Each structure stands twice: as C-alpha cells, then as structure tokens.
Image (tube, rainbow, N blue to C red; front, side):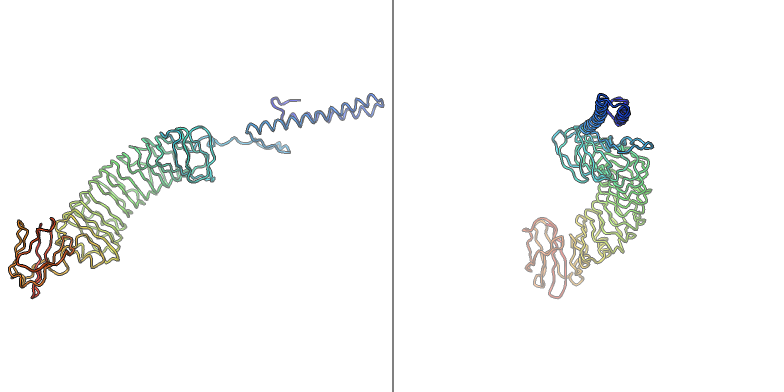
Length: 486
C-alpha cells in the first residue's frame, strides 16, 4: 500500500502495519464466534496474509535504503518519530562554490605546486576536470587536467607562485594570506576581508587593482615588478611592510601609514617620496630622488638607508642613532655629515665627489666596531685621505689612502731632498740618493707593493698603468711622499 506516492517510505510502512494488525484482530474475533473447520482454515489464511504484509513492508524499506546508498545519498532514519523536529537545512552555498578559482595557461599534464591552508585541516581541489579530490593542508604537487583550478572549503591561506595564472576569482572573506607571485595577472579584484594580513602580487602585469575600501589587518603588501603608477586608495591602517620596487611610480606619499616600517621602492621613477616617522628601513636605490640635506633628522628609528644611484648631493644623518647601514653610492655626493651612530657597521660611499678632508671627517665619526666595512672607491681624493683612522677602529676599507705617518704632507726638513718624476720616461730622479735610508712603493689602495733600492734614477716603466705612492725616508728622519701616475 502506498499512500505517500513515489518510493515505499516510512509513512507507507506504518499504514501497512496498521492494516495487518486490524486483519489479525478481525480474524481472531471471527474465530471465536465460529467452531467450524472451514472458519479455522480462514483464520489461518488471514493470519498468514497479515505476516505477509509485514514482510513485504520490511523488504521494500530495505530495498529503498540500499538504492539510496548506491546513488551516494546518505539518509539518517531515526527509530522514533519526533513530531516537533525541523527538517535538515540545505548545505551552505559555499560548499558548492569554490573559495578561489584560478585560470591558468598551463597545458594538461603540466606540474603545479600549491600551498593551501584550511581551517578544517583539509580542502577539496578540482584540477580542471570537474572532479574534486580531498587534500590535506600544506604543500600539494600534482598535474593540471584543465585550465580552471578550483579550491573548495574553509580556505584561509593560498600560495600559488609561478603557475602561469592569468585570472583569479576570490569568493571567500576569510583569507589571511594570498600569494600569487610571478604569474600573468593583468587585473585583480579582492572582496571585503577583515582577516587578510599578507598579500603578494609580485612579478605580474598589473597596472591597477581593485581592493575593498579597507583592509584593517593587512600588514605586508608586495606588488614589486608590476606596472603600477599609484598605490590603491584602500585604507590599510596596519601596513608595516611595503615592497613596491620595479614599478612606474613618480611620487609616493606614505606619511599617513603610521605603522609602516619597511619601505622598498628601488628602481622606480621616483622624484618625490614622503615617509612616515615610523620608518626603520628605506631601500630606494635607482630613482631620481634628491632629499633636502636635513630631511632624515626626523627619523630617529631609521636602521637601514639605501639611496644608491639617485641625486642626493648632501645628507645629514646625525639624528639617526639606530642606523646600521648607509648606502649612498653613485650620487654625485659632495657633503655627508655623520656622528653618534653607535650601531653603524656598513657604509658605501663609492663613486661620489667627496674630498679627502670630508672623508677624513667621516672616518673620524665612525664608531669602533668588531667588524665593519667602508667603501670609498671612485672618489677622486680617496687616496689622499687617511684611511687608517677607520682601520684603527675595526673597519675594513677599500682605499686605505695615506699611511698612518703624516707623509701625505711634505715635512719642512725634507724639502732639501729634491725629487723629479718624468711621466714620459716613467723615471724618478733623486738629487741625493746617498741620503736616502729607504724607499717603499704603495698602490693607490694603500697596499704595500715592495721596497726599492735607493738610486739617483728609479725606473717605473715595468709597472702596470695606475696611480702609485712612493714613500722616501732619509737617514736623518726626513720623509717625502711622491705620487706617480703610470
């Protein structure tokens, strides 16, 4: 008997059981009122029919359950009926919607690496053929089947670098990390998100991106190696690290990012850069920047300053007591003021216009260190400076300059010792060679090359081209330094 229609369900089973009980009751009454053998036979027949109905109901119910199991549908049947219970809610919509979809130009069979984290410890992955596989959180390596990669589940972090991704659709608001470095993106849109702390889009082809009005938790933004001309107007109050080099910025005004500490904007076209007082690291090499000389007196937290290959002519960093490294190579710099920098251990001043006097002042201001490095090659007067001032404090220097003794200045008593160098013949003439006690030859860097024999004429034609220093000492203690340009 089927009153509910469709398959044999629980309601039909209940009706058939009631019918069977009624038949047994009728048969019993009929049996008591009749004593004939025929009626007794009819009683047995009715009883048999009742049990037959019961058996049929049970068999039908088991068959229906088995069919459901074979079709992959899981049904839970309670042993009791709760009239007040509510029907099961349908599956959430996001169970059937991917958290993230990635469009890739990878061909079928190409290998792919994904690093995905799920709040539940696992997620479902469709590699392009519509089939979903269960994957544990962490690194996954496999082969794509189609061009649409879909990630399902309560996904909180996704890293898909170098996967030739040309498009991405984000449907979740729960991401804390998204890394799509070195792909083929030309556009990017991110929905509202209060959890995202790190976003990396380095090495794509982006000119702009669409972000929500605010990303309150974002602390790291990496957009290096794109085609951006401006930052998005999104409010990012927690931003601490900005990596935005190799873009097309001309002006960046970052002073409103009050928690921003690390700023890396090398190799752009920057002519103007405004910084927040919270800045501890500025890497802005290969731009067109020319800061006012005292600009960095407002950044006491600064620890690393890299401004090589800009247009910085003069700079004062005396108000940066935490400064550890200072790179000012290739700026045409003529003036630098440093003092009271106890943490400083690396200075690069190569290829500038710093005088020997100014370099000596820099050496004097350097702190004593266990190990430090200062580079001054490419400054025309580096060889005339007294590099030993720095080396005596533990610094390694690429151009030592004049020796520790004041031989860079002709001693008055040494003027009686006359020397003439002929650049055409590469010979040095000494008026009274018998009064010479020693002659030492030094390279421009200050490295000693050897000792020479005191003779009226000393030939230097065998030396390689370059600048050399000849330190001449007389028997009565007179000293004279002669420069030789070979």
